[in-house]
Length: 146
Image (cartoon, rainbow, N blue to C red; front, side, top):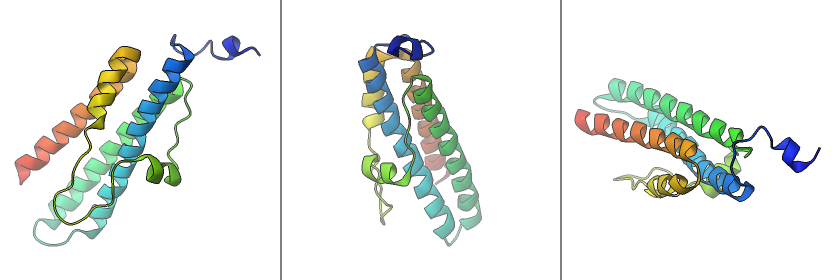
C-alpha cells in the first residue's frame, strides 16, 4: 500500500504536524503515568492522622490520572502516533521526579503544550485542556481539605 492509502484513516494533518502533536501528547502521557505511580507510592506509605481519608483520596486521584492517560494515549493513536507507556519511557521522558520530603514542584510544561497545540490541532489541544482542568480541580479540592 502507498503511504497516502495507509494514512487515509488519520485526521487531516500534515505528517510533521502529526508527529509534533504525537510527541506533545507523549510527554503528557508519561507525566500522567508517573503521577499515578507517585500517587500509588504515597497511597501505600502514608501513616498518621487522617490516614483513611487521604488513603482513599489518593486512590481516587490515581484512578483519574490513569483515565486521563488513557484519553491522551488514545488521541495519539487516533493521529497515527504510537504512545509509549513502558517503564523506560516514563523514566527517560517524564519531568516528574520521585517524591521527596517537603513541597513538590509541578512542571508547567502542559500549558506550553496547550498553547502549541492551538497552532497544530485543536482536538488534541482540547484533550490537554481537559487534563489541565481535571488536575487543577483536584488541586483545588486537595487544598480546600487541608
